[in-house]
Image (cartoon, rainbow, N blue to C red; front, side, top):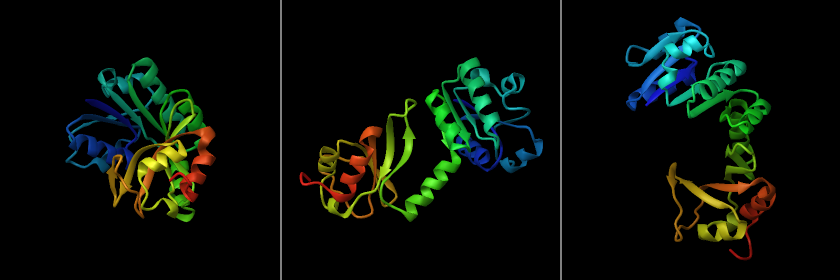
Length: 220
């Protein structure tokens, strides 16, 4: 597939290299032509100098035939404008924008433009290490009502079946990270110390689910 990336900073460079290595057609857009030096001679994609939300620039990058677009420049406004142009003008189906302001990211997420709130994500990751209990959102649907969250697991659940945790909490276990590897839980999966549980939950039930994950349940 053809993918256009706005921004050739550290994230854009890493993303471009990984997609290029996977065999995708990649075009990277940046206002600063010197930014492309970070791609190195091994990068086999295209580079385009220009403003990321300018139609002529995007068309030079092949936006009309792109199946995906990632806006990861250093500017929130540029990222969201470019994402909207890609989605609304050129009909690109897979669009994501990096937004530093978590409040704006939430607004655009609700408008149907997937966003990655860099500051909120980094803060959440740090807080998870400092205060490991509770739920840390990893994805939220555009309406904001359902989240995929990493939910801290309390000691009462160790040695219990994952299906018992689902039944007691009402949350849906999407997957478990065990020893750094993803695991799809089966009816026989037993929860172990160190497991990171990723669950689908509704916002109105979050507090109850967090309590059950932490303290256990008589039904477990």
